[in-house]
Every structure is written in C-alpha cells, then in structure tokens.
Length: 89
Image: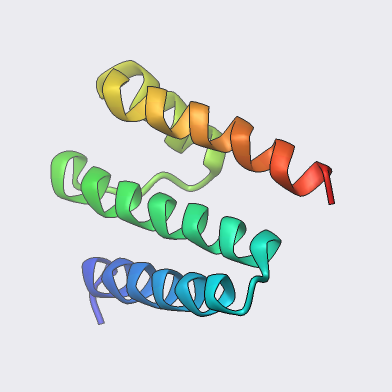
C-alpha cells in the first residue's frame, strides 16, 4: 500500500468516525476526529505537492506556514478552536 493510499484511507476513516461521533452527540470525539481528517487531507496535499509527508505536527505546520499560508491560516484557526472546545469539557 502506498503512502497516498494510507493517507486517503486515514482521511476516510477519521471523517466517517467523526460523523458517527457527531450523530451520537460525542462532541469532543467528533471535533478531534474531524481535525485528524483535516490533517490527513493536508498530509495528502503535501505528499502530492512536495513528494514527502512531514514526520511531525510541528514540521507539517511549519511547511504549510511557509509554503501554503492560506492552508496554514485554516489549520491554525481550527487547531486553536479545537483546543478551546476540548478544554471546556
């Protein structure tokens, strides 16, 4: 299985599980899983554009911040929103 296939499957799994968690009103889980789906999608985008996958969240965020500022703004905003939602529980 290629890295691309793994990332596509990860995205699909996280997204489907997030939808199920949302239906069950498990908002912490849904929020976390939706963000994981976003990260898998960003990793897939990076793989296609840069021909590699960052080895950590820090490297992912730095690469996206430097090369794809519109995506970085979305990730940064959503990451901080997710931390707030989870901390309120």
